[in-house]
Image 1 (cartoon, rainbow, N blue to C red):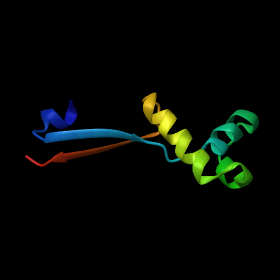
Image 2 (cartoon, helix red, strand yellow; image 1 turned 120 degrees about the vertical axis):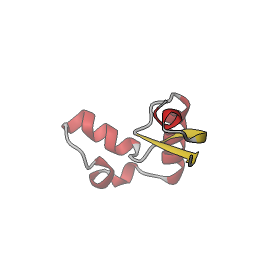
Image 3 (tube, rainbow, N blue to C red; image 1 turned 135 degrees about the vertical axis):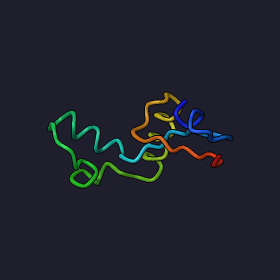
Length: 71
């Protein structure tokens, strides 16, 4: 809505997951960030891609990326 009101067109907004499952599990277990560094053994490209895709499908990612045509 903000982009539309600012006059932008061809607006596309997609979710993107920056932090992996290891980080979220660390937050749950320890109440702190940096799980993606401290628990790196829980990281694989396949798991991170699947986790990101699942969260994107649920519209629950930690980042939104908008692209639009300038007015």
